[in-house]
Length: 190
Ligand SMILES: Nc1nc2c(ncn2[C@@H]2O[C@H](COP(=O)(O)OP(=O)(O)O)[C@@H](O)[C@H]2O)c(=O)[nH]1
Ligand SMILES: [Mg+2]
Image (tube, rainbow, N blue to C red; front, side, top):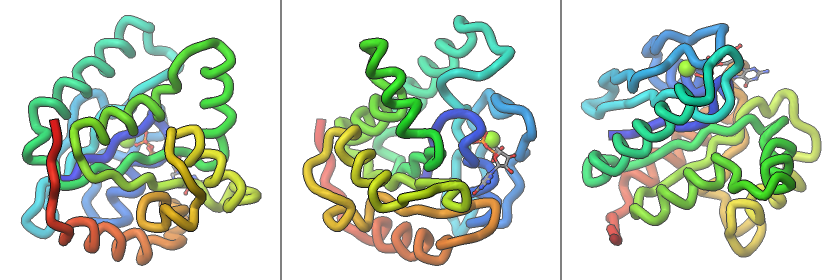
């Protein structure tokens, strides 16, 4: 199983379509995906997880519920999850992370990244909306730091992949990395 996680509106569904040709209800409105949506691709289950974090028009209570259910789904299925693709919006992720930090909160993307690592689930961060990004290298270096990792992008070429799901930029590279990570023998902890 491969799961796609990330805030709403970062481009998860667009990316799944781009990679697999499977339409998982790409929505114009954020928060369209409220329950995990599963499609089969190359004999593997692909799961589009509901977007977490702020969604305009959704009460906080509902957002919390989606987050709790997402965490539970991942915990319950951890042994079957071969790979997680954490999709972030490369243009706004850093700014949003810094805003949360200023409020003294753990940014939800960071929290999920660390949660996936604790479960020993191999994770790729798809830094999406590359078409809107400036200073890609510098931004990814900062993100690596925010995610609690030591080193720079040079150390994490197989983890942080800038792409544009909408325009198809660097999708072949992402596919290559996905295939490589799926081939790796897995070492599970916890
Ligand atoms: N500029 C830009 N927009 C994108 C990109 N990928 C997705 N989008 C747009 O972002 C919005 C949300 O995409 P969607 O796939 O529904 O996000 P999800 O909520 O994470 O599933 C849509 O309007 C997409 O067209 C991208 O690479 N660049
Ligand atoms: Mg979606």
